Image 1: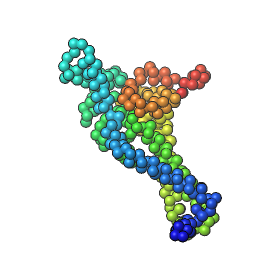
Image 2: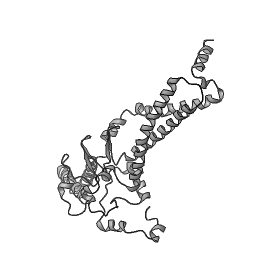
Image 3: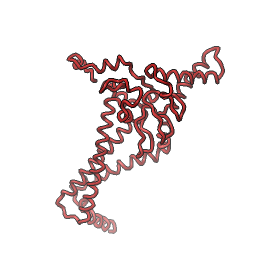
Image 4: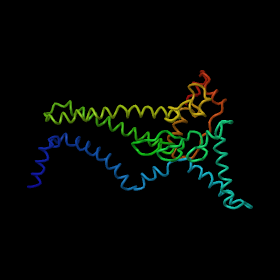
Length: 295
């Protein structure tokens, strides 16, 4: 008997669950919300090092330098007649300096390619983040909401995060709109609360949608937010023809590089030569369209 009393009390408080036809619809909504909350919360509970790995193992220039140096040291030590450890390490550092410098156009001063804080040579598209205190490969921006830099290793995941949040905001706003337009008798405070939440969701949705479109454009053109904003003020971008981004390789290649960046976090990109940029700047012909040059 107490069980039936609790059920009747629950159905009086939530009459939509009393209707058998609407009960399944309401349960699906509840399960969908819980799935979003539990799945994200469960990931943080199961992987306690998730935040630490996102901040400390973050696609930075120093890690790329260590990998290149250790690879050179190991190969040097395995060869017969090699020198001691310190000599191999110095040679590895010199190798990194040459490797990073060769990625730039010839004649670029070394002071431009050397970080004033970390005192290491930065590869192209890298920048020192004063919030994270490290040089980040293919630096996009420092996200205050996530508390970490967006760069080569997590740019793709950042896009999917924005995409998921945008879809969630749209879906929730539709639910609130349907609630406000329903003709069911509701208390005045429910209408007021629903209206306020709907306005808040729309205010949050507009910048989210704009950010999603902007990040999608950057992914299709192989740009970063820093490069888009700074433009010609970046030294190695000054020689590029107008309207041409040096690292653009076609939409398909750009998307592949963007989506598969986690598999090659420390792959470095060289600044294309002047001849390559001029070839990309030439007008399209019928043959170029047939060969899908833009892709």
